[in-house]
Each structure stands twice: as C-alpha cells, then as structure tokens.
Length: 225
Image (cartoon, rainbow, N blue to C red; front, side, top):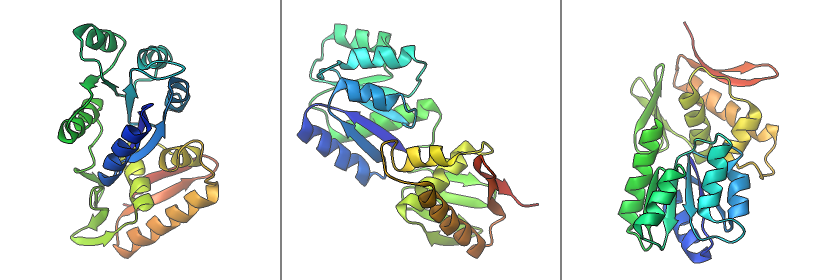
C-alpha cells in the first residue's frame, strides 16, 4: 500500500516515512500543500497523511480541494493544534481522522490501520488470497497448497495490486504509478520484468492462478479451469 506524507517539518516527515517503510508501506513525502494536492490527484495513494500548517496551501485547503475533485482517498490530518474547532473543521472538510502532534508511534499506526479498514482495503499484516494462492504482505511470502516462496518487495507489491483489483484489468501505467510513483523513471520494461518473475514463481508453485496479458490494455489474474 502506498501512503503520501505531506509534512513541512522535514525531520518529522523523514522519521514517519522510515517508520512506515519498516511496516512494509510504500511512502512518498512532500513538504508543501501545493505538492500534496498535485500528488493526491494522481489517485495512486491508499492513504494521505496531511499536516494542517504547510506552506503554499494548508492541509484544510488541500483536503477541501481533493474532496471537491472526487478523490475519496482516506485522509488523516496531522497538526500541533488540538482545539476542537480545528478537529471539527477537518472532519467537516472530509478528513477520516485527526491526530495531534506529538503523537505516539503505536497510535499513529493504529489510526492508519483503522482508516484503511474503513476504506475496505486489507491492511498489510493480513493475508490476501485469490484462487489457490495466499499472499502475506508483511512477510513477503507467497503460499500455494502448503508450498511457499519468498518474494522481493516489488514482486509482492505487484501481486498485491493484482489481487486487490481481482478481475479488473490493471494497466502498465497504473502499475508504475502504484509501485514506483507517478514521477519515477520506471518504464514498461520494468513492469514486464516483474510480471515475468511472478509468472515463473506461480508456475514453480504449480498454482492455478495465471497473470493474463490483455493486449494493449494490461494484466489481470485468472484461475485456470
């Protein structure tokens, strides 16, 4: 899962970023509201952590604008302010939760998990399943009928994306944005390489699940009869 951190306190943003990466989240960081708004519009994020007091555009303005654009990504507001009026403002603008700085690590992680559950996504420590495969995203482990293999991080992220989208076709552009970020230098070849890796591992485990190519469109998981 990919999380955007929008926080103008650079050291805090880096600390939270490292914390989330250790929990196997993919993380992007920006330090001003304008960048937060631009990144959020990409639609690639599962959660946004927005600081209220940011240069160029504050967190309330970012939240109001993205909700106005129809972006329903869960948002947790980060702020040094604890006044009830600020909390009410954030919630009225469409925030899913609100946490005042300084905060405890355990509380932040719990609020993130709760926001993702409300969205209907599976949080990283849970197992994902499709057909005869089980994917443990926290341990990067793929299991088929009792046999298991370790995946590298990108393989795991790609398979997680395909599983969570179930029967929907996923384009190469969507994969690049989700796995590498919309401003990355990743190319179609990078996607093809990781699809090939996953296909070989699924075949090795003798899974009935196949990654089908829909020519000119993208990839979708199928279960062989």
